[in-house]
Image (cartoon, rainbow, N blue to C red):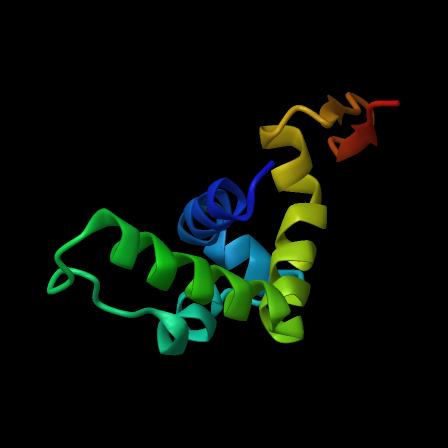
Length: 104
């Protein structure tokens, strides 16, 4: 999965699972972490100039250990694993607990 699709997916998850992430101690400040790196490319004329700026931004974001750690924490949350198909929810009838079983 590319960083861009992961980044978009992580933003999606922080919107829908925000309260659960906060309960579980998962950071939900990804947008704030990424914002300082974003550059407006609308004034650039050529696609080559735009791509050069996007590539530099991408490199800076992927070099930021805090951002990458936040993405890792989001991607490792059990609800995200279920949403992405790498785990399944098992509802235990007796206790009413919901457990997550990772797929092998």
